[in-house]
Every structure is written in structure tokens, then in C-alpha cells.
Image (cartoon, rainbow, N blue to C red; front, side, top):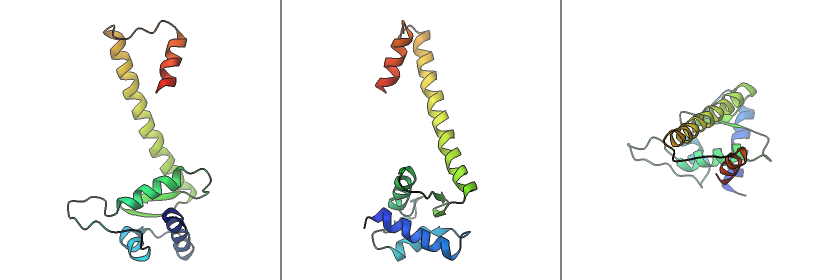
Length: 128
């Protein structure tokens, strides 16, 4: 059983016990041996492995649960919380696209980049 599978099963079990309760990283590290806390006081995230596994689980189309991660705690998301997670991703993606188009516009203004046709633009987008 993978670490991500153990985390998902653990969070589902805890969700059945109390659907509103967030589980801290400390609890997860205590109950699942594969995770270790970073006790450095300068560390913002106490266990980066949990955060990475949550990202993997949430991006896997075969997993039918969304994990809501907030302030180094997580839980199985309700429909409303899943929407919050999706909106965060959309907001970040929009910011990335704004930066992308700002660079393209700057390059065009300076003549650094001349796209002759719509096909040139399509080729550029496909190469990224």
C-alpha cells in the first residue's frame, strides 16, 4: 500500500468519525509511520511529504475524494470546500496566464517576437 493510499484511508476513517474536524500534520505523523515532522522552528510546513501527497491525491482523476488542506491541517472536503480548492487552482492558473500574456505583449512591443499568422501562435502555445 502506498503512502498516499494510507493517507487517504486514514483521512476517510477520520472523516467518518467527525466530518467537520481538521486533522493536524502532527496527528498524521503520529499515526502513519511513513511521515516525519520537521521540527525546525523556521519551517512553515511541518511535513512537506503530507502536502505533496495531498497534491498527488487531488490531481489523480481515479480518486473520487478531494482533500482540503488549510493551515497545515487537512480533511476530506465537503462539496463547498472542494469548490474552494478548485477556485484556488483556477486563481493561480489565471495569474500564470496573465504573466504569460504580459511577456508575449512586451516581446511584441519591442519587436522581439513577430507572429506572422494564427498558426505561429498555435505552434508557440503547443511548444509550452
